Image 1 (cartoon, rainbow, N blue to C red):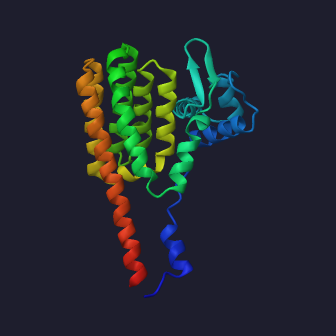
Image 2: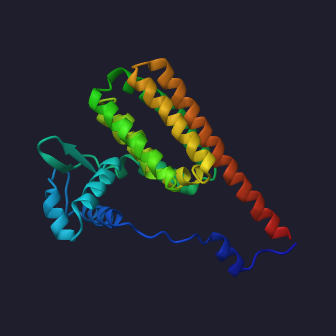
Image 3: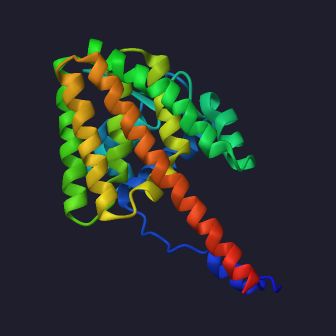
Length: 254
């Protein structure tokens, strides 16, 4: 039996480098300022116009960055007032989960079990409490995912945004942050679950059913739709990891 050479192993571990979008660079810089303590909890961010001028980017890019920061739970948008640094940075809430995910091989299955315990009940609360504005936001995000998939993209950003919007619809800030944290630490597995066109279309259909149930304020169907969605994602991700594991084993004994 022969093992892999270091070069072979490096090549297996390498992934294509994605071109960073402008709004992602804005997100990274603001995130760094928060981590360094230059932006503190409760601080108000400069206006969209000021941020656009400072970063020398379009206001569209700034708006996309602000939406991403809100999805990550790092800022809070207050109507008529502006954007503020969140009182409880999402990292402090999910750091133990993130550590678990990195250190334990079985952690991904554990995280999915956690999702199945929590997110269906979040969907129930969203179905009970969602406002017209919440529904409009979900519908807009769903359309954004459909448009991304039609362009041949994974739609992963809209996927995360939709789950965050469902968390927002509970009108419970603690649950909102928890969903945000889960989506953040599962970002890589979400991309894996959306690798094929078939999976992307299945994700859209699952999301469509969840949103429809919430719009109808049908708590039972919202719960069922969310359970089904998470189970399908779990099946895709874990089966994908098993396939890669078998592939590595075959390479190591060939």
